[in-house]
Image (tube, rainbow, N blue to C red; front, top):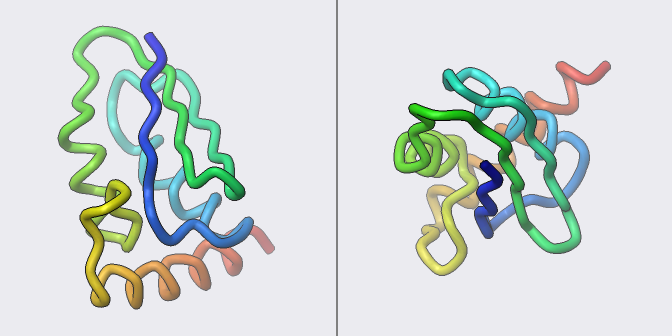
Length: 89
C-alpha cells in the first residue's frame, strides 16, 4: 500500500537523507520517496506497517506533519539536515 504524508521543514537533499534513513528503520517498509518542493513523503509498505509511529519518529527529528510543527522541531530539522548531508558524503 502507498501512504503519503505532508510534512514541514524539508529543505534539501540532507533532509531527504535523514527522512529516508529514519523511515527505513521501521519494519514493513518497501520504499520511501521524498519530494522536497512539495514537502511530501510517499511510503510503500506491507501489512503491519505503523504509520502513527513513523509520524512520531519524523516529528522527533524535526519533520512533523504540516500544521503541527513548533520552533523546536524547526531547529531539530536543521540538525537532522546537517546529519543527512554528512551521511551522504
